[in-house]
Image 1 (cartoon, rainbow, N blue to C red):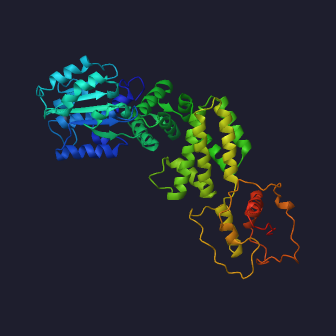
Image 2: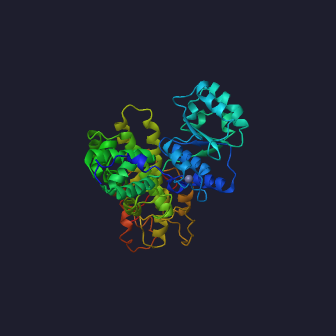
Length: 483
Ligand SMILES: [Zn+2]
C-alpha cells in the first residue's frame, strides 16, 4: 500500500479496539476484565501513567465493554450500535471531558446535572475525564458529592499523567491503576506487525530505533513510523529513524559498551567525539548505555531467555557475547559508575565532559580485577587448577578455601578474606610494576607452591598490572613474584 492511499494515521488506525489488543498493560487489563466478568465494577476508576501508553484507549474499551449489547465475555463486540457510537465518540451515554481545556465548575456542571437521568440506550452512563489533575479544586468539590454516592447506573473513569496531583479525597473514592511504559521489545513487535499489514519494508533496527525514541509510548511509536513513511516512502531504514530522534545506532552503542568493557580509552573518546559532532542526544546516550549494562547484569544473572531482559534477539546476541568475557562483579561496578553519571548529568552544563570522564572511569573499573576474582585466582593456583581470569562465575561469596598446605603460603587466603580495603587506596609508595617486583631470594623464601610452571591461562592474571598493586595494598600480604 502506498503512502498516498493510506488516509488514516497509523496511531488511529491501529488503536486497540478490544482488551486483547492492548499491549504491555496485562495486570490492569486482567483486573478490569475480571471485574466485568464478575459483575463487580467499581463506581470510579483512576488510570495513571505517562502520555501515549493507552489510558484514553483503555477507558473507551472499558466503556464499550460495559455498554456493549452483545459482549463476548468481557470483550466488547465492536459491531453493535453502542460499540460503534462509542468508538465514533457520539454515544449519548458515554461523555468525554478533556480537563486540560475544561477545568472549571461550569464545565463539570452538565455532568452533575445529567447524572440523575437514566442512560438513553445503554446499561451505564459513563463519564471519562481525561487529564483530570487539571480540574480546579472548585470543580472537584462540585463533583465530590456525586462521586461519593453515584446512582447505580453511573460510572466514572479518570485518566491522568500526574497521579500525585489528584486530591487524596478523590483517589480514595476510585480504584487506582498505574499503567506502565511499554517495553521496547513489545513496541518493536507491534510495529513489525503493523508494517506487515501495511506493506512497509522496515529494517529491524529501524523499528528498534523508533521504539527507543518513543520511550514506552505506543502512540508516539506509531506516529513516528507514520512520519518516516511519509518522509521516505515504504522503505524505512535505521539511519532515517536515528536521524529523527538524535539517537545513536544500536551497533555504535554496543561498540561503545564493548570499548568500556575492554578498557579501550581511545575508542571511548573517539566514539563520544563522533556522537557529539553528529548532534546525538548525549543524555539519551547515557540512559541507553546504562540500560545496556543493566541488561548485561540481568543476562549474567538470569540467562539470555529471562523475561526481565528488555532487549530484541539481535541485542541479546551481542549481550551474550559481551557477557562471556567479563566477571559479573565488574559489570555491576560499571553499572554503579553509570548510575552516578546519570545522576550528575542533571546538574552539569557540559554533558560531554562528564560523560567522557565517567566512561573512562567505568572502563578502568571494567579492566580492574575484583577482590573476588583475585581470591578465586589465588585459590585456583594453590590447588593447581586451571586459572581462568575473565570467565564469569556465579556471583556468590567465595567459600573459604580449605587449608591443605602445612607451610604458610606467601599470601594466605585468610589474609585475603579479612576485610581488606577495596583496590581504591593505593600504597603510599608508588606501586611496583610486575617487572619491578624484587625477586625473593630463593634460599630465604622457598616458594611453597608446586614448582611446576603455572598453566598458560594464569598469565592473564599475572600480567594484569593491577594484580600486584592490589596484593600490595592488602594488610599483611607479602608481595612475591608468583611466576
Ligand atoms: Zn458491542
